[in-house]
Amino acid sequence: MDFRHFVTRIANPLGVVALLTSCAPDPNLPTAEMTEAQKAIEQAEKAGARRFAQPDYEEAQAAYKQAEDAHRHGDHALATAQAMRSADVAARAASLSSNAETQRAATEVRKSAESKRTAEGDAKE
Image 1 (cartoon, rainbow, N blue to C red):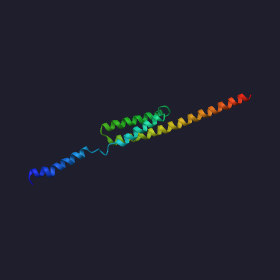
Image 2: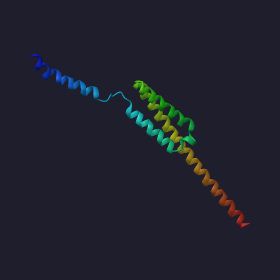
Image 3: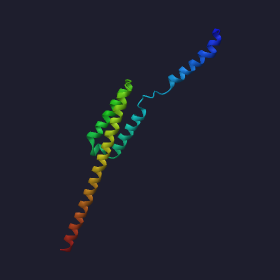
Image 4: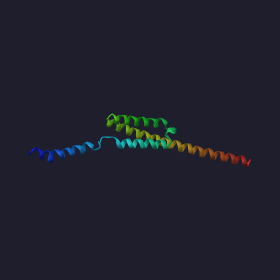
């Protein structure tokens, strides 16, 4: 086998394979986890977590920032763990916020009903 044959038949295809595999996405990157955490934080904010579950909301944001920092430094395992933690805490914040908002609305309805009954009672007298 001469050198030209080696280059055209073996080295070029191997180079192409090496190039393609180096461009392939790293399966260890926490892309899905980071996206999930970001969406969970957005949902928590929409549910009123800044108002009703501020400590959990802030914890979720801090965990997400730690995930970003770990990702930037190439620590994909830590980035994944922190992103998952962020998503879990954000989901808890959203749940707490929804419950708090429901309780607040129920209290308003109850107060309104009591005021109406009181006004009706005063009108009868």
